[in-house]
Image (spheres, rainbow, N blue to C red):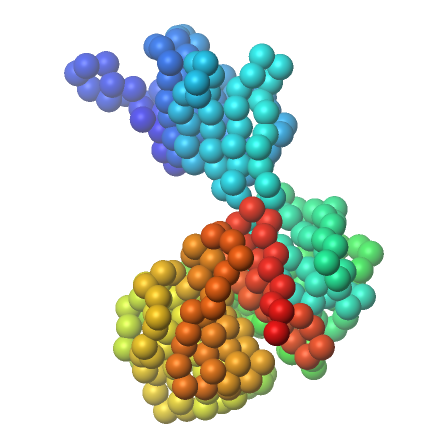
Length: 362
């Protein structure tokens, strides 16, 4: 059996014993062809092999994606699967990669008027028109959020990662504490808010990141502001918190669903989406549940106004709200979509698994 922090247990017919392995990386799958040929795989491309007497690290440089499954392919070789459509097959010459692109978590405009998408293993893609190219990564950590502030692209991610890109160079502004930072919102005046796990909330103050007093311990997964004094963040167990310009406060909601994204057209018209196709709306007084045409997980939310709002999610579900009802739109692919973003004079883009970037044609 394999588990977190490189844990491997072995059962000798009587009891389970801990087996030493040369990694502290979380392991998610284990399989073998015989007692002297067992492979365990996990995060960041980690692999360890048991030869009957000892576990050793398996050298491979073809991917740093998180690996989630291992089995035996036809011919008796190991086959490993992971995030972003990653598929590794063991051959005589080494491991062969069959990945189609990084898992992308967010998209934003950035320096030079370009669009930027961020994702697994520090992936940063820059788009100009229909052409997307990979930038030198600022970190190997997963990047979950991106936003445009004061002429720079700011990205946030795992273990407190905060990096700023001015179009030429990356600057490290990472926050101590090693908590996962999941989302960032900025405005044209330079205001910026970041949220993440354990209810962490950061705010840009005089050129530095300042942590606000927590009002929840729930994982906050997305943040969006109507203005610098009217900011909403959503997260696990139906959690919604609101910044009024001086303090954060919790808001009552009619659900315990995991909320993944929030967007609003004004202070009395805010939406949130999440698990099970959950859609909430805030009218300036209370949050209430809206009828949803799907039970699939909704991951991203964006709009151009109160009668033109889009939600995306698993199996490439795409919904549109026309001011009265939510309706399902046809999708060109069947992939997981994790974020959607637009803006004045900017295309509406959705990103997700396998490096997919979709542009709306309206």
